[in-house]
Image 1: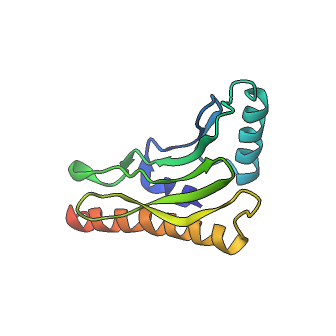
Image 2: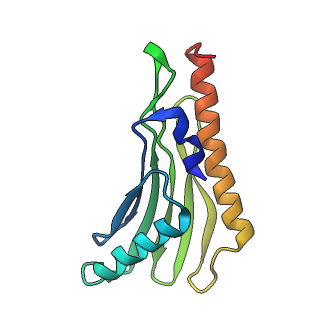
Length: 148
């Protein structure tokens, strides 16, 4: 989903990090199943390095370099979401656009037990929220900078 914005920026790179361990991957335009497979392979390969503590997180981060047609008033765009794990629960936080600071973080799904995964409708809402934040950021800055 975030890859649909790639064509507007130069120097785009996206990341997935697993805290308390070394697994991480980066990608630009790869299909979702390839990204998931790479992350799974990294987690298996680094399983002995993943901290077995009670707290960890998975961070998905976009990094759009600079607006391709921004001229002298170009800008970048960085948003993501984090799934935080503790003992027997998890919650999801997502970056949201805030004009004054460009970004804020909101808990989109509050704490729930580990055995209660996100439903497809919740995953769709997470994707939609992240996409809207990125779009609003681009829209705000292109208007503000007189690019369009």
